[in-house]
Structure formats: structure tokens, C-alpha cells
Length: 248
Image (cartoon, rainbow, N blue to C red; front, side, top):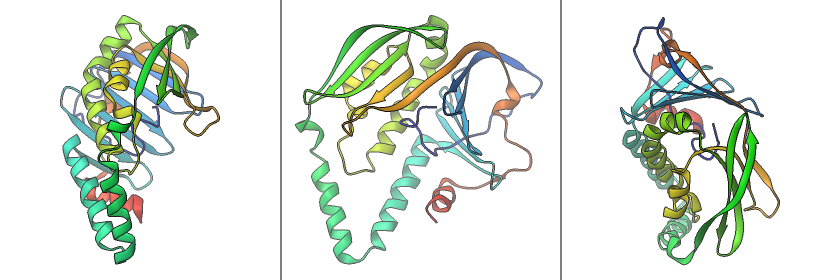
């Protein structure tokens, strides 16, 4: 799935009969990321790491196939563990570095009010992965920040709808840990993402175009419930343990 949304987040436990199949969608990106969408749940996998979002259950799950571990809980649990790790890391910094970082974080609190985010429809986006799309341009302070192509197929957007609140909540949590203004957290950007499913995006924040999302396959198919089950040989850990292992 789009790296904006959830880099190294969490994946999870849906204990249902593995023989059952449910209609859903499969999404493949050019770089190899694979995303499954079914019954308001999203599973994305790449490089031995998988994560699941369960929209109706407000639950976030994470699998590490290399360590054979998994963590599970609410988005609030994950955000709390992230905040605690940041706080502990700051405590361990030398006094001068800690003061500098604290000043940066304090300065950032009023940053959003000093920026203007605008979204404009840029016309027919053409066919992408077999789906009709609409193209949008996002500007920040009058400068092009990103171009996004949204698929608006009714069945696809219905499958994705239960995930929207959870994705918004996680995105806000993940990005507010930084020290820079994040356009993705603006009301204008969030309303745009409610209009469809992102299948292509190009960022211009660094000056030159940088592809973010590039879906090459998107089709409706039956998805086994086993895709959302915890492997029996995986050991459960906490979000705090998971985050610490990523930092170490």
C-alpha cells in the first residue's frame, strides 16, 4: 500500500475459518507491494512485513515474517506506544540536543495555521489498472505539492469506506510525531481522500517529481479468510517491543 499511509505499521489477528472466501479486491503496485481489501479490512505486504487494518473493529495489526512475531491493538494503542518511545528517546539525549528538539516540536505546533492547502480537480485521469480515474492537483501555499489519481468505482469505494476513519486516525498519529507541517493532515486533503481510492500519485515536495503510488493491477476477486489469520507459529509481542526492535 501507499507508503504515505503506513510505513511499518501493524498487522493482525482475524480468527475466522481459513477455508472461507469473501469477495474483495487485490491491488498490486509496480514496486511489488500487494494489498488486499475485504469486508472493511486492508492487508498490505512487502519485504517480509505485513500489516492489517480492520476498519469496523478499529484495530491495527502487524506481522514480522522475518522474526515470526506479531503485534495487535487499537490505533490508540499504537500511537501511545509511539509517543512513549519518542519521549524515552528524548530523555536519553544529551541536554543540548534534547532542548533543540523540544524547541523544534514547540515551534511546529502552530505551523499548520501558517499554510494554505488547496485541492483542484485536474480533469479525467484516464484508465489506470482497468479503472476510470479523476486527477487532482494539491497545492500548498500556491506551489504544486502532489498530483493524485483517484478510482471512483462504486464497489471499490464501498469496500474501502470502513477503512477511511482508521486510515485518517493513523495518518494523523504517525505524522504528528515529526517536526514539519504535513499537508496530508489538512481538512482539504482528508476530504479529497474520501472521494475515491488512490491508484497513482506523484509528489513535488522536493522540487522534482517523485512517484509515490503506482498501481498496475486492481481487480475484484475472492480472498480467503486465511489471508487475515495469524500464523500459528508467530509469537505475540507488544507495540512497544515491536517499535523498539525497529529502532535497535
